[in-house]
Image (cartoon, rainbow, N blue to C red; front, side, top):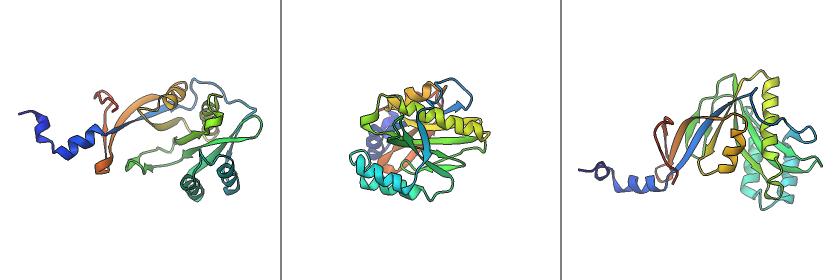
Length: 199
């Protein structure tokens, strides 16, 4: 009897719609471009988030704007604004210190005291292909170096080739893979030697 016949049909259907994500780790003092000194990364404020909502309504909808404002109250999370050489806010990114949760896929993440978690990086469409995402990674690594951290951690959807390429330049190494079954609100974590193709 094929093993597939032992799996309920609802789980088989959920597996076909799976999303695969990977956890990566990378050194604070590692390869990759240095941060461009003409650009800045600053802690977000509600006023700046309001400006970004007005200037980039297609990139930052009302729900996301509200979520970013709420994150300002979380002491372990830093919401950072990416500014280009002209001072224009071009996107945002985050750092988290300590254990956290990827709420979208219902997965707890361990982050040691010598690490920080990089997440929810977003460069507005009009400013892409200018190296701003790489800048945001490089500048966050500089921040971590000043704080005595030794390693960054991130989680990237298997389909997000652009983000994977950005982090690869900084020596990101895949350590775990996660299969999110949305219909069942479950995430399975597997070692990297198990071959799980993206859907």
